[in-house]
Length: 172
Image 1 (tube, rainbow, N blue to C red):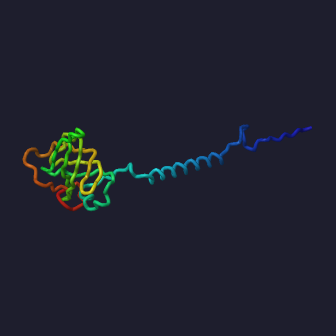
Image 2 (image 1 turned 45 degrees about the vertical axis):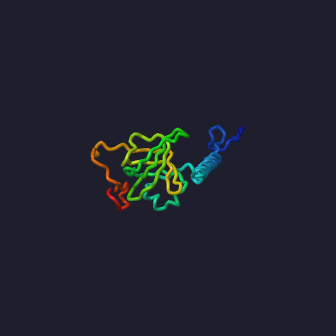
Image 3 (image 1 turned 30 degrees about the vertical axis):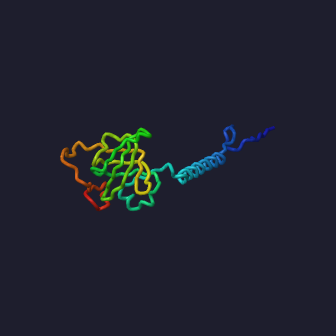
């Protein structure tokens, strides 16, 4: 007499529980979609954390478009334009100066301590906002002068520099 036994396990199983391929794949796809949708949501949300990096001539062309937006403004300090005074109410030095690039000039204001390299003709990046015709900076960064730069001599009255070659104006 022969006894036949039938197994309750699906054929091809090695005695363990059946693998849940379909369920793990669905979970993986669901998590991927959630991460992508969340990333897009963060990018499209409030842009107040973003700062635009612009040159003085770009902002001067479209001043209304840049009003009250956070900017990093790049240019050169116009020689002879730096005016400094002490505000005794808040105990801070206040600076008013002009920044130029490719022939366009912007008025700038900063209250605080400027770097040692901030001087006439210095290449600067100002972080702040454009309010009306004045750029109000909350941070000033000044580039260190090149050790190959010619020392001595007088600065020209205006700086005919263009920090971008594509503009076609000024000297590169």
